[in-house]
Length: 434
Image (cartoon, rainbow, N blue to C red; front, side, top):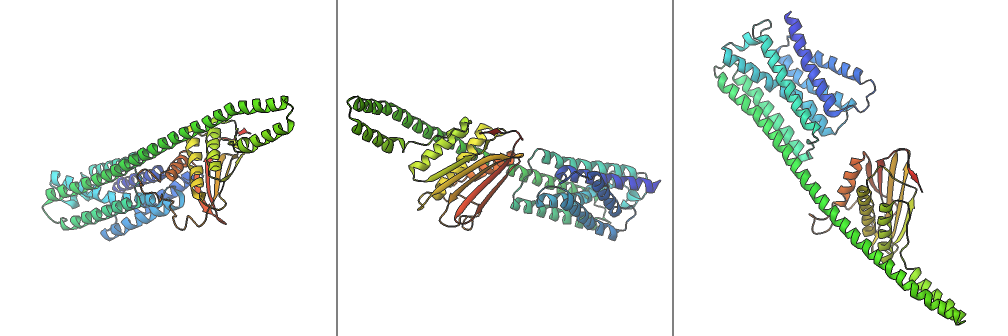
């Protein structure tokens, strides 16, 4: 009976670990997920057998980390930092929890550690029950933070967090040995609880700091995006006024040409019309008509900017995406083309090329521009070189956030003095053919 109780407690603990890993990270491939979980559970049970000696328990802690890390590395999704965190969390959480529960029962019952941990003892089942419940709620707290999409620390913050876990683990283990045969159990209990609270507070503070930083960055990106949209509106108004002026002038040009023709001054009329074509018509902005008002507005605006700066631009629109909001498509195209125009301005033969379309389930945008020298070697992270970095340099971040929103990818590469930015986004199979 005692062996059955101890085995059930170990099985419960292992099931909590399996649930934590699977829900925190998720499977790379859900094929035979039940079998992977079952094998993982069996390995955890073999490492968590009842009636282990103290030496075996010390080895089991490291073995537990190894088993979990191997499982999450092979079968589960997520970053390497998240996989390390989820591998460290059970072994460094179980020990302090067990220590606090055990010490609490020693303080309030007056029994020794041997009496409480002895299989078949009166307090053994309550100790096991409370320790597994506490471990379950600790795992639930971590999952809750994950489900809120909050736990996305930087590398430095991950390092600090792991260091804090490791230090407190060593402190707790050392205290357990120091107070093993001591009568100062209330003090040991107080210290253990304070260490647990310190870990929890540090965890929450780090998460809150990262969350606040993310909000500030999103605010700056939104502010820059709004400024870009306002600039786009101003440029569009300027193009509109140019077209209105040209339309107004064309009426006068045609009236003059008609008067020359009616006066039988054919040669003068032909020369006058050719002059109008060369000076006015050829320099008028090219018009793109894809059927999508937002795409047309952005492209016509950028084409006008290219023509004004002597930049050759080519646009190949194979199909128009239907699954991207007007705001997102505007931000993507504006940032991609602005970066391309800025990248080739001032070169001997500046050129920009846009290719956009849909292939199977993906919508792609590829923007190329000529460059004088490698950009990625000098600036691999594509950070802004403008002085006021607080209001510049968010174009790439805006592109990456939109790509993430649509489960897409962003890739930058260089080849033969050509810089290429390629964006792939999830799209429905149905698309609007032009």
